[in-house]
Image (cartoon, rainbow, N blue to C red; front, side):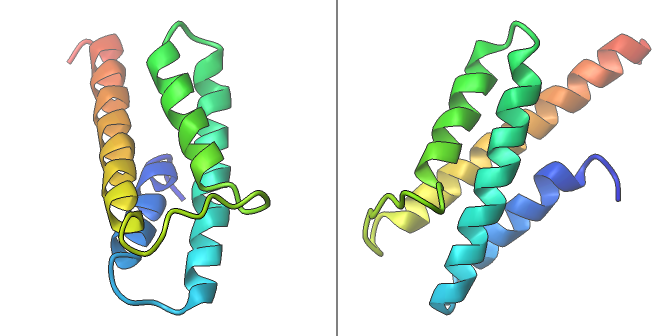
Length: 104
């Protein structure tokens, strides 16, 4: 599995969540987004990119599967779309940084 899966899998799951899915799917979504967000926040904590640390830490808190944040069915689609935006912008920023260091 490539490094891009850390972004693409959560993005796909979040977009599928915009459909009407069973409750178990949203529980799985919470676990996946929590784990990937926490992972990215910890990875970015070593660098001087506080925006990504705080953004993904907040995302991990929102999607925490243990202490659930109950926002209501009307709000979650907007939160999911915002989370897709966070993951996409981080993916683009990481790829640009990688290409910059490669000299492309």
